[in-house]
Length: 234
Image 1 (tube, rainbow, N blue to C red):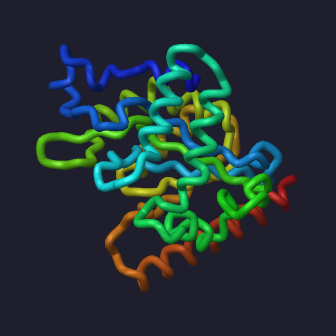
Image 2: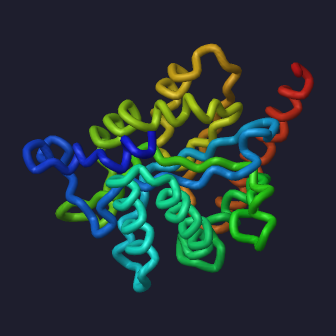
């Protein structure tokens, strides 16, 4: 599945890219996301679904280049070690996402999620899976980061739906308003499962600290209620 995704550039095909209205970024390959080592045995299994990767245009280091190089090597060789190497660099780099200072993971930890991605060896206890509706970063003439509906829909149907099927989560947290409309599609992927979907805001929101804390507590409350319901029905 990842091999198919990293070899897909349909949205950026010069012959049809006008239909998708996107341009490639310097990070010019699909980006698989982190799945915690203990995700598969977690009760419940929680998937955080975001929109698409950022373009990385504002970064001043070489991390994106290192990850992209490994993913390109994986795309050519089907060497799983290259994919694992890219994911490992990504894991360590997630402390720098959303402005650094570990803000990205803290945003989700404050919802009560059990994720320790870069805290020493404790990352091996991590239980959360992350994914994006669209696997590629994209830009357009007026924005460094963009995610038109046609791109999101195509990528979900071609790649992400299969990922959701494989992950078979009990809870999906749709993070960002652009992800919310995919609730019906996700339910269609797992029609026979008792899946719970929570809609919330994006980690790079601009609603302020007070609103952030209020919404995080709401998600935490919803997760606790779902865990209790699942426990009572197990």
